[in-house]
Length: 208
Image 1 (spheres, helix red, strand yellow):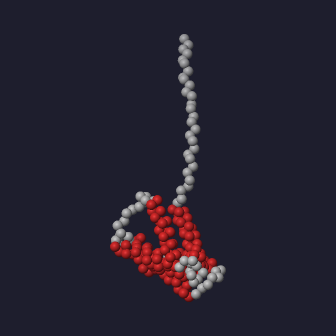
Image 2: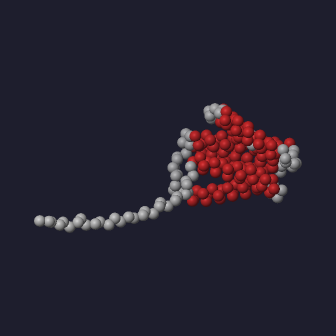
């Protein structure tokens, strides 16, 4: 007797093509963010000397400093409001730190700005940039002496190279120069150095 069995049912195979994952924009690494921030800082920093020299013929040193700080305050206020609640860790500042912050504001934001503005009324922008950029060297030596950060060779070499580059650029400037302007720009460099060292001290120990 021949028994015929039904063939097994045929199951159709259903294939589904999954959509390709959407391409995401590459995220900036910390090193790239630092490079971008450094580039923007250099551009803004260098253009400030030219702008101060140009506007200095219209405004005196103190009113120009007030306008600069007002614009900076507005920009920082917008930034703080925009990032409110994100990556903000409340820190209880000590009285010593508050005093250092006040000193930094007087020496750097007020004293440095007024001295530089006044100095650029007597010297050209290239000379002012050369004199004020003595500050990174002073900061490097000051941090080694007073903050115990030592004297890394790479930092000193980089500061000398940067100062040499500014010197080369300033050789092509042909503006007026006098000793009062030179003294004011050097004073601005010293005030900038003092403010930067005080700020570094505040960041190192805000509660102490």
